[in-house]
Length: 255
Image (cartoon, rainbow, N blue to C red; front, side, top):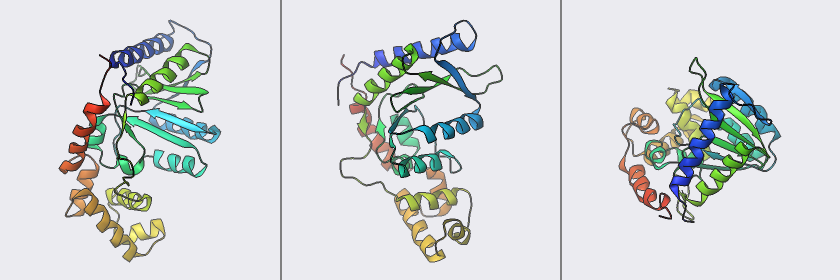
């Protein structure tokens, strides 16, 4: 892991946010920088369309990652992996401490000083979170390669990855398999074992085994406790301990 000045990362984050604010309010016009979408539903639809054009990789920085069992991003990522797209996510120690599922949904997740919400697609364009609209809707902006905003976002991601540490140790497997994650998501939605079996096209006995595995992995004695743990409440100490262990290494600076 390279030594990175965290001040530089924060400076870049503020510079990107400031430039997008000027563009969003009409105080600046930049060729190659356009509004992708407003609001979570429209942004997800735009990302769904964008995913289909990805050919090599998607590198993402998210300061916080909450576990949402209905998040369409799960299917989006599964589709990308099935197509051979290399997915890389970096988030913060706090996200790791409050979202025990993150190492299951993104096994190669890195933990570090993520401060900017951005995605770099195939090293050809960057999607960056911009300022909210006057109605409070979130915004996402498309920055083409060759623009200063693209270069800033790309440089930020390179530095962030260098300053970050894998959440899982080398050779360590995620606590849950992909199928167990699907069962866990269904548990959060209140589905019975029979309903989960129908949804996933597996037997009820198989569902029971997977539910038991989910409970063990989360240190839960019952479904309700497991759901609370998945949602970042009532957490067992393991993820918090991992976050404390990773944070000092992930947060080193060059002084």
